[in-house]
Each structure stands twice: as structure tokens, then as C-alpha cells.
Amino acid sequence: MCGIVGYIGKKNSKCLLMEGLKRLEYRGYDSSGIAMLNDGHIICCKAVGKISNLESKLQNADFDSNIGIAHTRWATHGEPNEVNAHPHTDSKNQVAVVHNGIIENYAELKKDLQKKGCVFKSATDSEVLAHLIAMFIDEGCGLEEAVRRTMEQIEGTYGMAVICVKYPNKMVAARNGSPLIVGLGDDEFIVASDASAVVEHTRQIIYLNDHELITLNSQDYIIKTIQDIHVHKSVDNIDWDLGKIEKAGYPHFMLKEIFEQPESIHNAMRGRFDDEECTAHLGGLQKVKDRLRKTKRIIISACGTSWHSALIGEYLFEDLAQIPTEVEYASEFRYRNPIIYEDDTVLLITQSGETADTLAALREAKRKGALTLAICNVVGSTIARESDAGVYLHAGPEIGVASTKAFTSQLTVLSLAALMLGRMHNMSPVQGERIITALRNLPFQIEQIFKADKIIKEIAERFTYAQNFLYLGRGYNFPAALEGALKLKEISYIHAEGYPAAEMKHGPIALINESMPVVFIATQDAIYDKVISNIEEVKARKGYVIAIATEGDEKISQKADKVIYIPDTLPFLVPILSVIPLQLLAYYIAILKGCNVDQPRNLAKSVTVE
Image (cartoon, rainbow, N blue to C red; front, side, top):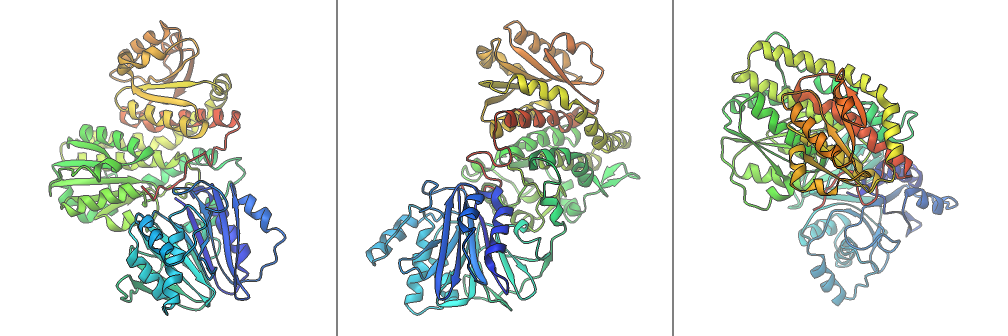
């Protein structure tokens, strides 16, 4: 969850570290801090809240150091304050550590260290790392060996970077379960939680695997395992530029990413159609195609927004490919001893490719012999590397904490996968061709939806201070309703619930009155008349109905108080279109309330801890 950046090289580290923190702020913004080596001392500065607060404290500080580490925090242990902010140091102020993850046995370690005279200042689990490393250095270990022995002692997850006054030209970083990369520059290295902190300075990166540590000086590096075995790594290249993580004139990343969806959906489809065979060609799945053809069941596991796309994936695979499919919360899947057979396929969906629960679900599925596939956005991420095969979204970096373009890209890739599997089985070429045509139309249709911006703003103005929202849909539109409700909750802090429309009368109907906005996804499909009946039930109780409807539907305007029209498409593609106005509605309500839509309270972009 937290963001780590470290620098060693020829430049003054302060400016580069602060730039890196700003790029990583979406990973956590409870507090931040920076530590540098200067004239044989560790200089440390911390601040609560946004990184701008730390920047203000450092404004007049004239540090000249070519080595340093920095951190932006999403709190797990200990409330957000300066004492609990990273970096953490040992009792003698000789070691400084930044850490992302959770040390599960920290209480036991802390107790032992206190008995040995260590004085703890914070309430965090991370501080034990500084004391442990310092203790091993006092016993005669070098910095690398001290970090390695610390790795042997701790249980849990970590991405960490360490500096020490005794080793002014050395930095050590290590990972287990929490992402960490190293950018390779010209006689300089940047350690970071993800590529956004690196791309301004270099496109060449190394991905650390679990239980690996890297020792850096300004000219060279050595990578070893926790067993002290040397590792040789290939160098990868970042395939996007700095412009992808800038706002490009938009007031917020979220709005920019909403309006990028025609492009991101096009990128998710580009080069993946086989018009001759009327199917999809997913290069990342070719090596497991024979095994996929024989799969008896698909299990999809995900968290949050990705779980909503998984629900739509369940409908897709059963509808188009006739393969029984189940959807599991990754956080539950990993603990309930799931029944998995060797002819099952377990599909993991994740934007970051680092989500802790989803990664654990992947490893459980691999242990039980299933074919594991990943749909993710981040090239080189842990889940992408550990799965048997997979498909990248190619959505580009998503900086806004509330996912938008990643969700619609996930649905696009799931549709391609369902098309491919369907054509492997019983789907006709005519149906395949029809699906390809509909998929290709999506970017243009989304551009049309953006023209409803004025109507969506008017609805937002009316319900800026609503206490509750209800989102309803049936079939493919039920998970889209869940996603619409989640977006509103995440960024505006208004209580919102998504339900299957028919379930409304089994409880939620008790909440409806004249001040209760109810959003229906009421597009024209096989169960359209049933949804109209549900709208009538809400209107009979004086509820205010906002309908997402198919272009040209005049009947709906006689039933709903406000209608937002979307273009007609195949039923299983409707969620890709219907979610666009729901994203914009949440955005405008949050803006009118004065909320920080890019960095909503208590949330972080990538959940790399339990």
C-alpha cells in the first residue's frame, strides 16, 4: 500500500526523492518522510498528511547527500502521526528503514529487542526492522548480511530499503510479497514501489522477486536470495512515458482516466481480433490453449472493482462459452480450503498485479494443480510473472485510486476471452463476427456518452448531499450496479448499495422515500419489462428514479425522473457503456462536496497487505 523510493548516485537525492514521493502518493497519503546520509549522520524529516506538507518542511533545508530513502504511508499499525511516519531509525540513529507490508511477528520481536535495550519510539511494526538490522551490524555483520539475517527473522510481507551511517556509499533493498523495482540509470539507481517513481529518469528496470535482496552502490549492484545465493536478472524496459502519469490539463487524474476509456478499450482490443476465424487471438494464452480447451470449470478470483468485473466474467463464460464458472473473493478463497481440480482454470483479475489476497489465491490454485491465468494491467507484476499465462490490459498507468479505465479494460479482455473460448466450443462464426463488430464500436459509443455530461452534472447538483443511494440492475447489469455504488462510496463517502433489481423488494424497498435516489440500469434487453416493473414499485413509494437507458427508448422517460441514454450494443457489453455515466455521476457529486477524488480517505491504490 505504501510508497517507497530510494536513491543512490551522483545527484543530490533530496529533490529526486521528493519527486518520486509525489509520483507514489496514490499508494498512501497518511504521512510521509525522508532520510538522507549527511556528514556521517542520518538526517530525517517527517510530516503528517499530504506530501506537500513534507515539502514545506524541507523548503529551506540545504542537504547535500547523494543517498537517501523516502516513504509515503498508508497506515496499518499505529495512527498517522510524525512518530509513526517512516523512515524509522534504531536507538543509536545509525540505521534508517522504509517499509511497505506487515511484520506479523513484530510483537514478539519487539519484546525481545526491548529486553536487549532497544528503545522504541513508534507504535508501528516497521520499527523492529531498524532495530534488528542495527543489532546485527553491532554484532559485526555488514549491511547486506544484517538485512539478510533480518529477513530470516521476520514473518510477513515487506518491501524495504535500508541505509546506514557505517556504509555511506551503500543501500540495501529487499522484498517478500510487497512490490519493489530498481531503476538503472547512469551511475545511479532508484529503488521504488512501482515504475511511476522511476520513469522520469530511466526506462530500464529490474523486478525483485520474493525473498531477494539487492545491494547497491553508485556504480554496481548485487542480487542475492535470502539463502545468500547470487541471482542474475534480466533488465526490462518500461513501455510508457511520463505523460501517462501527468494530468494533461484535467483537474483530476480520475476525470482524465474516465475520458481515456475510448483509447484504453481500443488498446485492450488492438491486434487481438482474428477476422478470418471470427474469434479473438490472445497471444498470452496461446501456450495453454490446448489445456484451456479441455477445462471443465473456471474459477475467477479478485478483489474490489476487479471482483465486479469477475461477476460479469462469470456471465460471459457461461453464456458465450458454456463453461461453468464461479467467482470468489480472493480474501475468502485463500482461507477456506477451496475444492480445486487439475482440470479447473483459475483466473485472477487485478489492476496492479500485486494485490496481496489475489496473489495468495494464485499460489493456492497453483499448489492444487489448476491452470492459472491472470488479467492484469502492470507489466512485470508479481501475479503476471507467477501465473501460467495471462493477458495484459494495456490500459496505461491508472493513478486515481478509484478504478475507472482498468475496469472497462478488464471487461473488454474478459469479452475477448469469452469469444475465444466460445469459438473453441459451440459458437458459430456468424455470432463471433457480430461480437467483433460490437466490440470495435465501443470506443466510438463511449465518446457519444460523454455528450450526456450536462445531464449528469444536473443530477449530481441535485443529490450532492444525499444520505443514501440505491443502484439496481439485472443480469449483466447487476455487477455494473455494484460498481456504480462502489464508485460513489469510495470518493464521495455517501452510503450506496447495489442490488439485483428484483431483490429490492426483499429488504431495500423499506428505505425508499421521496429523498431516496434510485439508479436503475434499464437498458432494452430480454428482461427490460421486469426492470420497468421494478421502477414502478419505486415510483409507487415516491422514490426518485435515475435511469440508464438505451438510446431511442421513449417509454423509459415516462417512468423515470431523469434518463441518461447510452448507445445500443449487445447485452453482455452494456456494462462497459453503462458504467461510464455512473463513474461521472460519482465524480461530480464528490467534486461538489469538496472531496479529494484522486486520494479518497482511508484508501490506497494497490492493496499489498492483508
